[in-house]
Image (cartoon, rainbow, N blue to C red; front, top):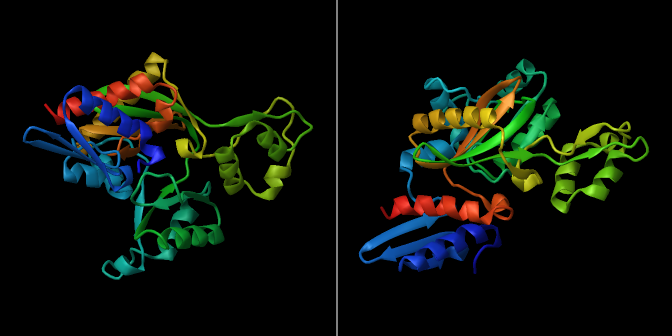
Length: 311
């Protein structure tokens, strides 16, 4: 059975292969694709079409390692500090220290972002400002993952995703977070329930306490419903039209790709305190949300990557 969340990715591969007489088999519920032409056999797994080396893929998938690689290459990036779960930390003293995590929290009064060190789903990502929140976040993440990464919370003004193939930008788009405008009468909860989708409401209840949800925003004041720009949490993809912003983000993304040694990737660039920096490099290029709005653009990007797979 084909996974619904991978529909656009899979349909593009199947359409590409059909047009070029390439045999295609979809296995493992849509997670694995086997493509065969004559004696050539190529694999795609997840959202990775197979262009990236194993090392580049591993570095991109490891948030703390990726931040280290970028920083060492002089590429501005949001720092991510690695902490290991109990099974791994016994091999590296201090790598699972809650006290070290607390020291990071003390150093960053605006709070921390705690997330799994590997993976790109956007799940189990927490903003914490207190010791109790930190301990809860750490326990929840390490119950499901062997390690976590902690970064200082930064007020992200804009987030842009650059899809690159061999240092060439195929698609550049921003992520617009859901918001409501206060009317001075209704609570934030009521305004959101009237305007937001189910997934946006779910993120809202995770990110705001009851007091914040029941407060009434002043008339005309815009309130964001999510501190994250994650598409799975309700943000919307919008193609970037500002040339200066596009050029700045593409240039930084190319530097990041070169530092990691990655060929096909989606790179998240964020603007905080007026400066652009890299948030993440993703080896698996997922464009389902964008594909619902711009299917031809997404199909062209995947097809360009597949051209290189079968070059």
